[in-house]
Image 1 (cartoon, rainbow, N blue to C red):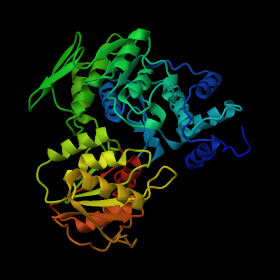
Image 2 (image 1 turned 90 degrees about the vertical axis):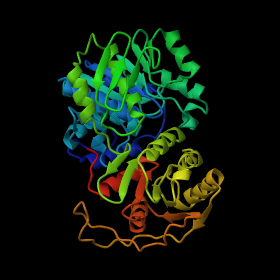
Image 3 (image 1 turned 135 degrees about the vertical axis):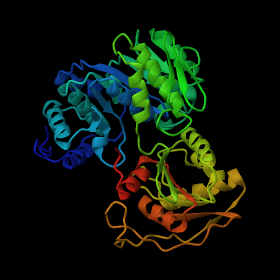
Image 4 (image 1 turned 90 degrees about the horizontal axis):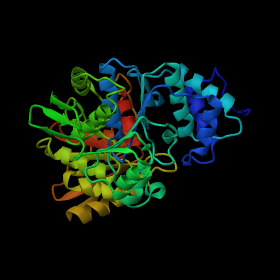
Length: 470
């Protein structure tokens, strides 16, 4: 334990600041360090473990599993990442966020026993979540894989059932630049003799081959499980179980039915361990909630929040936007990390957006607003053939507004020119909140405002509106 280490009485923000400085790099894939510390902690993980990996759909699938299992009466721990507003969102105990005190107690325990082994922020917090699930005697732990699979900290866990929701191009610097390479990395969360659920309709050959090589019990969408339905209800069909008369998941988006079938396939595969009545499935799917996944806020103009940050997710977002009906104009507030395929994401949405508000994101991975705007202009022109107008940034003046919806001081910005039907406008803003307020000042009550591109983009907007990630 170093002299700079926080003590047991330190606050959670103090601990999190410390964790960010503990290891030489923020992302350092590998399991040796976390296994060494886990052994020192004497972790047993006596609960049923479900790991969920994939390019997109992980968070939704985890949320559905949690909701269904809670409705079935189980004590459920949920670990996801990243968070939108508060770190506590990452660790849930029976549907509630872990408290600062609960998390700090586990961080202090790890610090006392880790010795000279340094851990990344994610490795440290993964151990904290697992320790807390042990301490709270959870029946089931649902664990979202952070990045890839083979070398991700969550792969420390000897899972009882692994799910891969989808395989597409993302994190190429760590996982490879093809679906085959990425699929192989993700497939390493599979375990010999254990259920391995793949919801990708066309999985890479490498994933299928790896499952066969290690003797995993591979469940493939379209072969081992599927769904059918009409406008009113849908049905799940698996190897030996059928669940019919189901209401559609409360999470919006056509892709959510695929995520729901993955969750139900995992539960079918574990049916000898976890008894889940039909009513629990119905209640769980009807009550599941997950912010910033095609989240539509009430009021006018329509505000849509989505953390889509790769072309695969952006394509699904575009299809969902098309199904929403007619809006005179769409205003897009976007902020992205520079290691993402920004041009590919913008291209998937370019035909649907009239005005772009490019927000700079902080940190070494954040894309500056001017750089982002340049990529947006090129992608829009290449995709739509429409010209772009480079307008003067309309930065907000931070002054009190008496009618702020959250009770917090509001932010006001000067109005900007109306949308030009012949050209797409692109403006730059120092941060997501300034970009969002500029969009609010420009949009009419019949328009819609889309906020997307990163958790770091959507989170500040949720916080500003007073809507915590519940």
